[in-house]
Length: 255
Image 1 (spheres, one colour):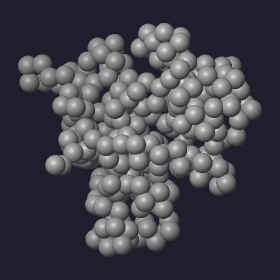
Image 2 (cartoon, one colour; image 1 turned 60 degrees about the vertical axis):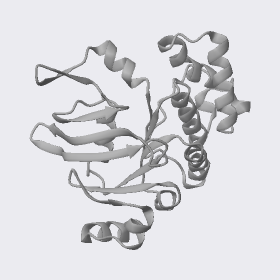
Image 3 (spheres, rainbow, N blue to C red; image 1 turned 135 degrees about the vertical axis):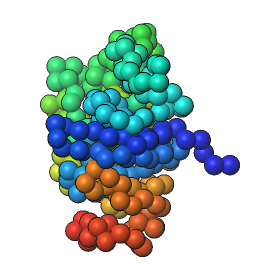
Image 4 (spheres, rainbow, N blue to C red; image 1 turned 120 degrees about the vertical axis):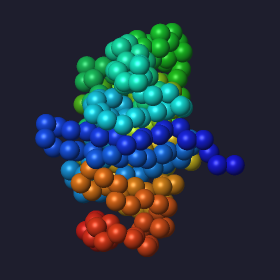
């Protein structure tokens, strides 16, 4: 039985002034699968993630999760943005991890992770703390609960950021080049956490330049260039037998 489509991106367009950043992008991500987005800088990958999470509005198209349109609703045949409170409520189901960790420097690791569940989901302190400790164990940082971000390595900070996103119990996790700001020797520890999440059935969309990760972990690989999807398929199809010359050229430069 084929998995249910969790996230359905249909004909999404995004403009910055006269710059057409996303030009009718369509993508389906089944529940429990990992989609890796590849492509050169400026191809629209990060913008697409930000549109999914409604950190950026879209100018045309539709993004649905579990059959519900994200950020917009149809009234009288026209699409209108949902009220801010409803958008924020939907956003709670979408975890996002950025290139830079964006941890609160004046909060401990534990406080960084418990803050959003306590404020947004009204979780009790005991419940939020128990979940945070469970997640710190999962990302290999159980001994850092009382540490401050400044005392952690970049890889450790990124693992805390992943735990913080997971604390909201999202339906899907978005990763925007989560290892690009790390020293090479720290990349592996973050990728291991992501591999474990994938193995556990977390639905993930990952913008990455880590080709070995995409080949090993992805269920689907999507190649973008110039605001469009130029090719998509299984890792074997994309890496071993790409059909588009632009895909072949990109892979030659990143391998």
